[in-house]
Image 1 (cartoon, one colour):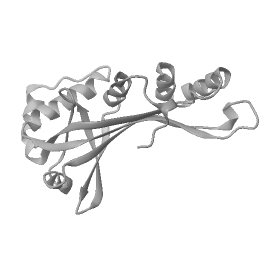
Image 2 (cartoon, helix red, strand yellow):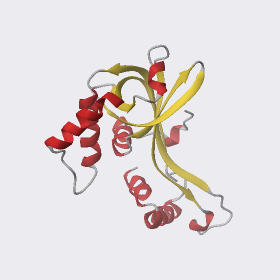
Image 3 (cartoon, one colour):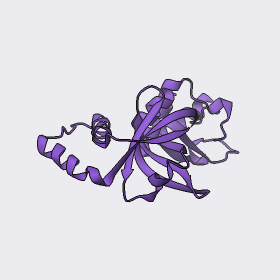
Length: 194
């Protein structure tokens, strides 16, 4: 990923927070030299790893043994910024966004149930009220496991872009953030933290 230094994350914790808040990632690998991608839930794992799962019916996972290098793309809040928001002329539109790209080596792991349960717990932690699986729900998870493949990515590189109008003056920045708050509150919240 091309990154301009002025749009880099201030620290790795900012990147990890984007991953936690936006775990539905794009997992990209190659099959016979052709890029293949699957949208899948992917979470931070143990130090230096990510864990995720996908449908066993998806043929992409079969390529992991012969082509273990993957790119995992996490997209955060994003939005178009119209020149009408700036209140100045001349002006040009732009797109504010945040993303984290992770490369690494992928390997299959046996405990798909643990990965699925961790995924549910992570997703539910972002909700209120949250749902707690019952024993009957856990049995349903176990019944579905033959259709699931779990994987771990051992992170090699991590790059990010947090392009959030930080290169404009404070008055226009406040206007952009206020506009985002009305139409795209998650983007406005991210702008407030960056």
